[in-house]
Amino acid sequence: MTTDRYESITERLSALEEELRDLAYERLREAARAPESDEAEHAAAEERRVLQARRAIAKAIGALSPLAVEDD
Image (cartoon, rainbow, N blue to C red; front, side, top):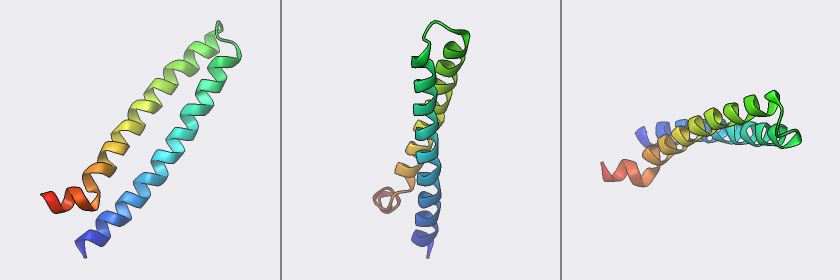
């Protein structure tokens, strides 16, 4: 039963990770359109923040994966 809860959480985290990935790509595209503009600088900074959040979620997914749970 506990494994099912981990799987459910992992699925939701995976959906969030995918959403953040899409947002990061969107920000990169914005920054590439006019690389010297203030908007591009803001988009690049936002992309870095989103990437950091995405990595944290990916780490959580790894920690909750079935193999990681069995190892504990």
